[in-house]
Image 1 (cartoon, rainbow, N blue to C red):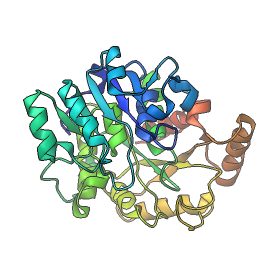
Image 2 (cartoon, rainbow, N blue to C red):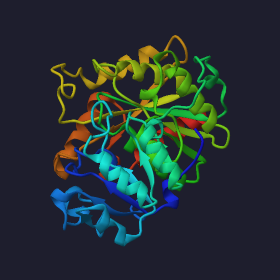
Image 3 (tube, helix red, strand yellow):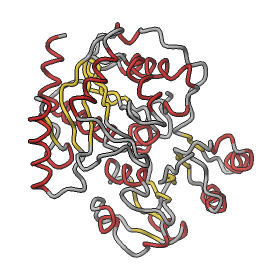
Length: 353
């Protein structure tokens, strides 16, 4: 979890060749959203000449360029790989681009499962050019099996959980952290995925950890965050009903041992993404999470963060009202309407502990 190459200290060109878009390049979108003053250009020849805001509706003034050469006029000091494809492999066509990037003296920040620093060819070239290859997904060595130490920290621990992948667990966690800090809380976001790490500068990508140690990694994140903060917002991953990623979800639940949870959901989604598995009702999914916390450290869901990006504002407000009526819990879309409701609920838990 060593803090190195913090992106906030760099001018970043984001590589999203042929893939730049809200859903196609989640990493690029996250960097533009949370580091708009650092991202100087996005590289995608298929959308070159346009403004980033024209494509993802944020990042006004950031240009999309055709090549690294065009991006260099904006004086970047780092290149970020802006996609996270299934399997996390390096697209073969991008190897030549990375040769050019490293030769130009730019540090490289990557969230791929293919660790650039372990790639002998790229590592040798980076060493020759005094360039750092930062693999945000690469876990630290010697992670322990979980020992329930997270239950003993003085900090209040809030875990974002969800109905599925890509419903806003990271984004909601960051927005709640910002809102809590605005109220004077000593809050810290605790990243557990590559995108959160690339924005926040530290954390452990749980999906790259050997399964026996995933809960231990979550525990280590909480112990690290609690050293200097009394409110921790831990980024969730996957979903209990996701056929592929439920294991990492349970590891985070039992490793971080939260005091409470925020449930994240996309109202327009009826089945698990890329599967035909139907999503249970909101009360059923919330009950599943709460039930699994009981044997070790009971925790309740305190509110809902709804991802209404594909709904009109009127439809989003209707979805929030419906979710509140169905669950009896406060709900909001943290991007459209802010995280204040959730911070209100967190403050109640924070005072009770």
